[in-house]
Length: 345
Ligand code: ADP
Ligand code: MG
Image (cartoon, rainbow, N blue to C red):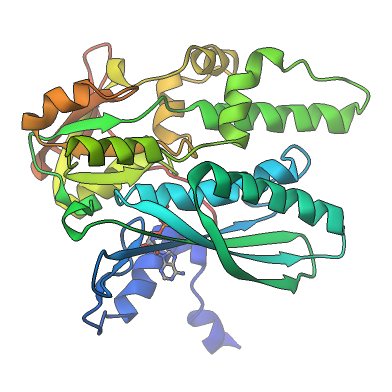
């Protein structure tokens, strides 16, 4: 017994990223057609012709979603979107998905119909075909695993690793709203549990709740890049929060970066809600998750092309690694950014 105790490491000690590093250190890519494996938003495979881009995500009831406030149709839609977003983050076009579900007997056929209605809406909206999956029972709750497959010309793949000092840091939309939407839904859940007859007044929170329950993938940005020939030097989708995802770009690229607080886009509704919760709006933008905007870098020579993009914000710059990753506050301070991300364990 004592020996076993000595060898037991709590997963919380490694954290999510530490655990992924540990897994990836065991596996080398041995095949010539495996261009990129673990470590980016998606893997890149070369079967001749345009490379194939593959990503997968797992959503677990009670961890990633709560059916008390997430309608199944929205859940189905979102489960597809989070995968399409990772394909877009490679500058690729999503084309196919597989969907696997584990369901407990708490769910009816009609409930599963609702889930697939949402999945179908996302497939239609993004011109993606569902091509397979797996169905099994679960002792408790609902688990959804989706794999998305896409493709892009070899010379247009964008990795996390291509940013260079002097590159401009851009984001495709406002940040922090999805996190605040989640906080509102959590609060209303507690209110409901305490007093089920109370009707929540959420009409002025539509934007925030929408950002949490029905996110979109920024496929139109990928299409814009294709049309204009603009090629970002690095890209990632913001699923864990701006701070954490910028750190991924900087780590993979071997650079530092700074963000100008005053330039980080935050929706008015998000700003107001953050104040109401007595939170700093910039903290919500940096550390809130699930915005599913694209964070990308471009060479300074492409500045004009970026300026013409709809809803793209220039929020900072890539610097040498020795400068670290920092926030230039509106008050003139320079603060180090630490990746909080989400602590699953
Ligand atoms: P994202 O937030 O873009 O979905 P993740 O942080 O989930 O990315 O994953 C980072 C990288 O680690 C990806 O390349 C992913 O494929 C890989 N990865 C995550 N979990 C595992 C695992 N259990 N086994 C192998 N690779 C994994
Ligand atoms: Mg990603």
